[in-house]
Figure 1 (cartoon, rainbow, N blue to C red):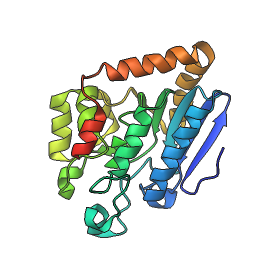
Figure 2: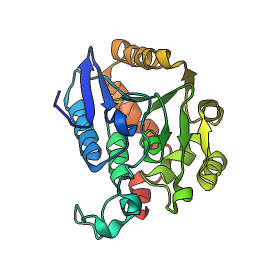
Figure 3: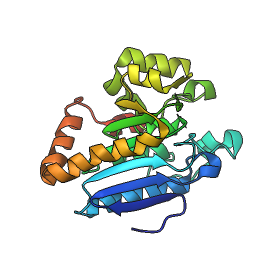
Figure 4: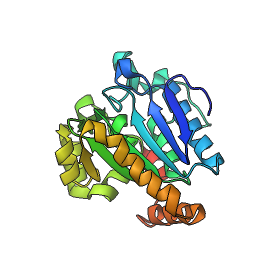
Length: 238
């Protein structure tokens, strides 16, 4: 696999593991990470030997959200370059979410620690989410004076329902793994040392027992049938 600066991508026996790799910053999201995540999912789709993808974080965090080293300028669109022919800069987290949405391989999130802001919204287009005990999760945008990003206004209510989604988004509070489970955001809660084995167990069941084209088509059918609209519409409105 390609060498990256802020993530690792390692394929073993049909399972590609993507690890967010800025542990000194709790794997906070950057422009470099955005580019590399998109590239890693491009590699996954281009490799017929990859049957499933597991995404996790290095160290004690999954992703602490956007890197706030620039303070308030982090969310100042006027300081960012317009790209892709749009009048305003694209939402970087949204680009990652849309790339995951379009992936032909099933994607499993192993949320090993804090996941807030884009750190949790990037997992919403992933197919299965598992979380470690002690992990903290938060859709904290309202407490930062911004709105939900990364197409999460499309994904979140479809996963957990409008009432639960609105409670988490309107309060912006940070909640624990058990609440995430009760709210339907994650499949299961695991002791830290058991999280990755559980994620790999699901990935192996897919890789060892299913037809790849069937899985790819089923993934597309299930996601597309969630609603008549498309997350790109929500992305353009963010």
